[in-house]
Length: 192
Image 1 (cartoon, rainbow, N blue to C red):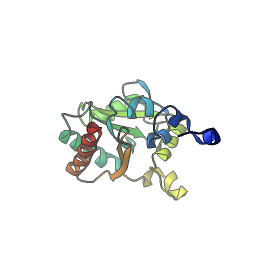
Image 2 (cartoon, one colour):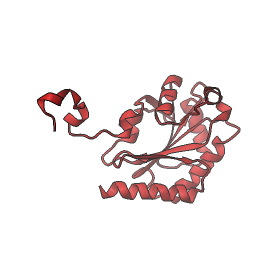
Image 3 (tube, helix red, strand yellow):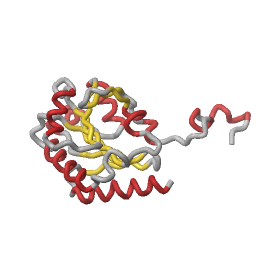
């Protein structure tokens, strides 16, 4: 409750009746889908009525390390979640190399995994993607390692805005286990 003595401590979110969520700290950057559609990360991809459970992968199309195996694993996850994909669950693969990974390049890369509803590949301005990646906590504490694209980890950020539960999973974790975690989060969100 706000009293005249502590009005300055009340946040705009509290005044509006909405609790602060982890997604309030995510960079709401502009991105472009593999189809050429412009979106904002938080407003258009994370939030909704109800909010979808999202899986976020940072990758690039010409990676010779972890990106392709992680994407293959996401295709398997998609198979486990097929009936929920595009509705309760969304997957977002965001390039780390927007200079190379244009919407057309992302569409071509996406086609390697088949036409999978609810799996969107995104690009944008390099600085915006870096800001987003950092706001999601997907970076190495060693700046030299973090700056080297060949050293990125295959980490999936995973969560649901309605229940404000976010975590990270190894991208090469068993697809069935990733799908189970997604289903648990989706059930928790639907109970609210």
